[in-house]
Length: 534
View 1 (cartoon, helix red, strand yellow):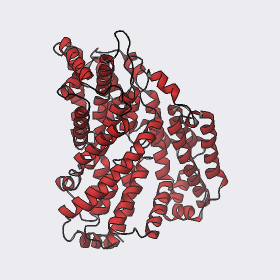
View 2 (tube, rainbow, N blue to C red):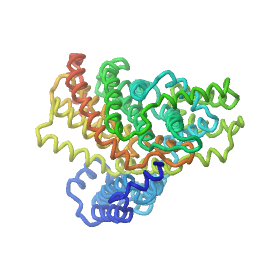
View 3 (spheres, rainbow, N blue to C red):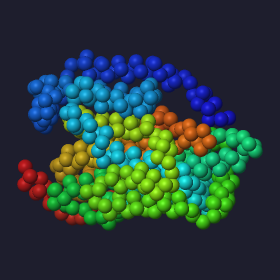
View 4 (cartoon, helix red, strand yellow):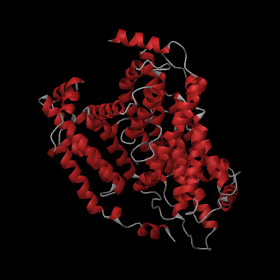
């Protein structure tokens, strides 16, 4: 069965795009314009300065109007989730819808809306998508596949090697970069495997195998964020909050708490993917595909000029990401992937433009706009405080219960806005909460609980650039059609999201926290710092 047939088979309720378009629009209208604004929203907007800020920007004239703008944002959230998950309208168009609503409903200043499409993060993703196009165009992905997985055989061994190694590597090197390098590799392995199992001259596609490989890569890289501060900005942000309370944590101390969990999470990803796809996958031996890639690599001979330039470009960009500092950010080095291939004449400019998944880019930029709306209007803070109130009501206000509740809340929020944004939002709220519980180990424990869970953005395509990258670059080599659909993230990511949290609860909170322990006196030091801040 070709992948086209597989797509046609997926009908039913989810395929009724008009229905979901109406449902999404109706929910938006109901929450944003029909339901009365709760007093709790007004209180949050006024108490925490959001109303004052919006009045200074000229987007609201009084606290009541500011709170209504917050309600509109709360209405956008479910509509965006419905549209992103069901593709009621093209996913790139849903991304464009976010700033369009922000402009026409005057939810944020014009300059701030524009920054969500032209800031560091959009430029980073644009460069990463271009990088993937160039890697495939010059054939370097086949050589990467041969180097990384060529020594493995069978079906299970390559997957366990992939998931564990990517989880560990993702703890130290940009997971987004690895995702861009490895997605074409996964599709090369896929195409080699299905070609080896097809009749001469006809490729029998195995869509479940493509999803199996791509999601294994994506989810393994996601969970690697737990391991060290180098995994992402959200971890560094949390370390900054601890420093504000005079209880700083160093790099290797973080690793003592996070790194033991990473290989276990990698194994869980591998086992889960095998259980989900094991019976569906028709091509159950990757050895022919890997062997075919190795043979192609041998036939290619030594690295030619285009490959050498591509390899040098990847190393240069990776080095600038690691050592370039805040001045360069991630976006500056990434844009070299657009310029270097053209300047050094290894590929054509139009091929890069045609190869970039603009749907994925517009989708991610729209997600950044949504994140800015959540943060700047107070909608995210209101949701966080409402959730924390529920935790207190069900007696999960301290210790293990609090860590479980906060990690769950953090994991949910990070599927809607950036991991760094989630940490920046929750950090100032949860650290004082942890200190006030008088539980030894605070505020490190609550901070780690929040930061760890921001690595589990498995459920929505907008949750992390990794998801957008595998969606954009994960295309069938012969047809160029996408192997993954947005609803697949909900379908396969939700259960893994729960499993990832459970692993952190059992291995991290109930295991590592007890075995490693926490330094004596950090609670008293943080309490004194909090009192001085007040």
